[in-house]
Image 1 (cartoon, rainbow, N blue to C red):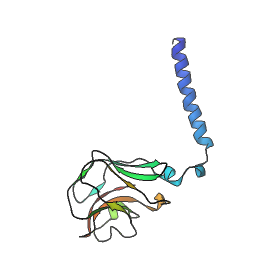
Image 2: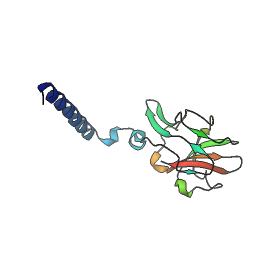
Image 3: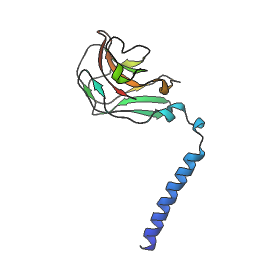
Image 4: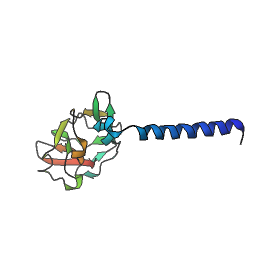
Length: 146
């Protein structure tokens, strides 16, 4: 191996090791709860109606956001809302879908990127799923496990 290649390999390995040490040295309590509990996810696990695409949770300086990505699309429906639910997505039923759930807002559109800001101080560990639900007719559209 050439000296330059060895230096690059050593530098990359040293940076990885330093990053690991820094992460280990940073106590979890100093991270906002949303940063600890908001891993990126994708896809919809259960759908009563057509829902395609990916989503993620993103922590920003001003809060945590649920993002439906550019590839998101769903069938049109009346009064579609986005919720976080304490129920497992596989346990959600039409009339019980919103029980103890937090409404993030009306679905902004049936295609494309959109975002929903989570309420300040929300404890994501209390929620098990993300739901799209027709409130008018109490119809569970679909959802994903958090």
